[in-house]
Amino acid sequence: MEKQLHLNLLPPRPPMAGGFQSSSKMKMGPGRKRDFSPLSWSQYFETMEYVEVENENGKDISFTTACVCLKKKVYCSGAHGPVLLLLHGGGHSALSWAVFTAVIFSRINCRVVAMDLRAHGDTKVKNPDDLSADTMAKDIGKVVEVLYGENPPPIMVIGHSMGGAIAVHTAAANHIPSLLGLCVIDVVEGTAMDALNSMQNFLRSRPKTFKSLENAIEWSVKSGQIRNMESARVSMGGQVKKCEESPSRRPAVSNNIEGIIEEEEEVGEELEEESNKKRMKEDDQEIKKESIFTWRVELSNTEKYWDGWFRGLSALFLTCPVPKLLLLAGVDRLDKDLTIGQMQGKFQLQVLPQCGHAVHEDAPEKVADALATFMVRHKFTDFKEGYLC
Image (cartoon, rainbow, N blue to C red; front, side, top):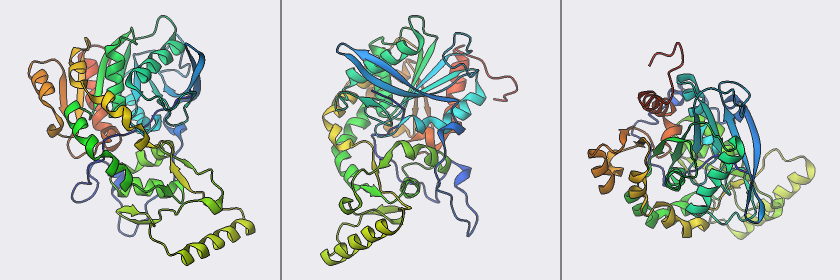
């Protein structure tokens, strides 16, 4: 399987009143057109490479990992600082961590490895339909083993949403022997289990296609899925892909954006036929300037694994024998087990208000500050020289 990192399973919270609150990049002057053009991963990560791992039946996974370390020799023994292993949410990819990576790397001495989870991003695997918590947790351990051998450096695992659940399962199963700590972002068992009942409706409400990558980026921002324009411009490329169908077989494209794009579901047969003929004629006359994009991951097909990702997660999180940090977008997401555990001092809780579900994308500076402070307090690393905390 080839892996890169991105994804969100829980639905995004609606935008805050008054617009997007968490990024100054969203503040545009009157009449100024927003730039929805995609940004390259290379502006945030130093290298990207494929990592091949094997299972009992031979070669199984080829992960794509985007990495940053103090030196460009990403996997050399001379690198400095602990490794931050970043696991994205459902449907996303490693690129969802791009802006956060740039920020955290400016705060503390560390290395960063972001990977596309099984069946996400550019990951390729023999059995992409197996998204069980156990299988994905084993994937993480295998990637770490291939990257670092028998003596891996200290590793801090950080996961968002589905990736947070997989981080907990990975830590609980001791797949990373050099585990330093665990950070879970905006996922708790109680809220996640409650949200599963409405998940299919949420997924059906999303556009099925976009007329371009720029169109997908625009939808992600205006729908509130990602409230940070810069992050949306780099991360949406990991969520969508070009359709492979021929132009005559392509589905209707979502191109009407007013807050949230609405799909063209009711089009008359004559109008549809005329539109198809016109599109085919344009294809014959010139190279098509726009390509239709669709989601890389059909999340609705992963429903059978949702329960396994989240059920028992709170108890599993509390039993992990390493320092733990839980970052939430709101206190209302804390369930009973975690409330008791937090009162008993079993983990550190920090609430980051005015964020959507994609907390690390909406407010990368706040997440980086919380994580940097946590790691320095536990003496996992030091602040970079010259950084004023």
